[in-house]
Image (cartoon, rainbow, N blue to C red; front, top):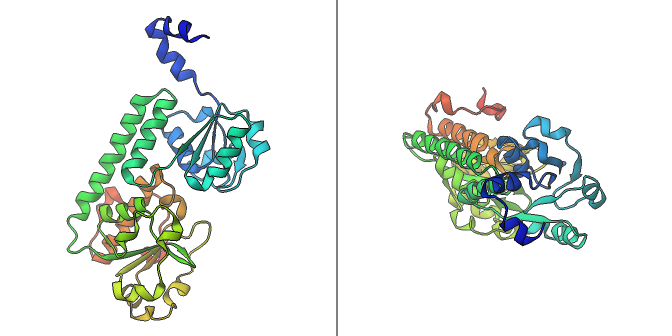
Length: 297
């Protein structure tokens, strides 16, 4: 189809043309997978990351990549007309795919606002913008409800979020923002704007002076070892350790910059912080997935 013929088509045909493209989407990270399912566009997905967990049925899709590595032949085998990627960590994958003639759209969202923007952009790419706007409105209302509930806390606990253990890495921007929405105050707020994990490394010896009242850890791809956290030199004087307020949130709920973090992730944060603050959260805002066992006792 030439540009001239496209321009001369009746306007009422344009939405159909837009909705028909792309039809075969390969997702190299899990947040775009979940977003497409929530938009009702799951049939377009022809390949996913091996880390994909939400929704569970998405795991039946062909696995074509990890996170910083990809099976290029597997990607090409599913014949995508679009590949969705995320961040500078996948830059080498994106470059190789483009050299092989594949169309790639790379997102780079790092804040709550940018996550919502990602959802809107993706909805436009697949021709369902109205559904995207409705989803963003729903997610925003959920965050507002969490924020309103947190406003009733008698105090806002000081929070250390561990994105990794060795070196110790503090929370990325969207996580720190969600902690604030959920009712806590991050103890290293100045680091949130550092996109690269290497620039959010914290010297464990600096933690006692910030004295977090709660430690929330999410070690991507690894179960959190609470004994290791509590046993760090000098941390026996940290309020969170003395009061046994060390908790885990699974990375699939909080470390993917998409709908999971804005729903289950922030609900789990809110539940933990309500517990530490000594209040019962609104039952309508309770987590829907399995939470840390120490919260169920």
